[in-house]
Image (cartoon, rainbow over all chains, first blue to last red; front, side, top):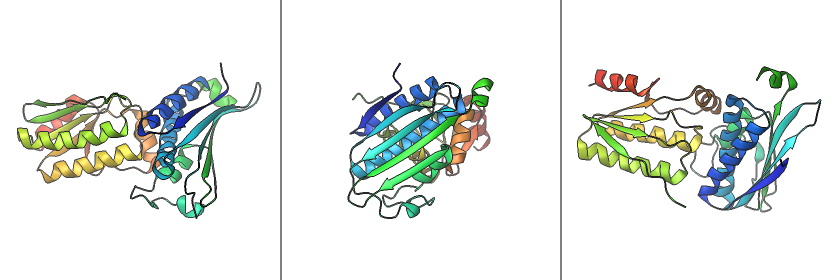
Length: 141
Length: 119
């Protein structure tokens, strides 16, 4: 079983593929149904951002942690699009430059445990999201 | 890519739509037009959207549902969203999504009752 991989985002239908992979890996990582739904929803928002703003990119996923420690799932969305000039503004609910609801990034941050944005105007964007599965939570499920 | 078509069926004077588990964006967009077309063609007075099979509702899906609800209202109809899963309810609320005035029901039976009540 692989601990990491990637899904290309080149068309609208790849957003569905990103969701499918995120669901599969979140399930394998041991998350319960509500957290799986949170992870897949966040992945859908972030994949759509890649497609909408950059046209194409990739989602890289990676299983986090090892035996005895906390485990989790990391999803990294990388594109070479126009970048985000003000990442703080982009995190504000309701802010959108595409006529959308402006809930993608702030929503993904609420649904995951960690969300980091690295972006250079003209140099692409890298959004890293992580969700942790604590050992306590693992015992409950 | 094969587009998974969604059928809009008429039961008495109510339109029924069952959403697939993981619809892509174009399927969701196509639904809007189909529903409005069917509202006019059948003179329907309401729409029941069964989303019990749907795994996730993201902001694009929610925005289209909210828009469709408002458009159906302009045609004199009401919209009931039926069967949302608990995990989807938790997630859409955390995302800050609203469904634009659609009524909701636990299942399709109750949704049909609701449309009947508003007649």
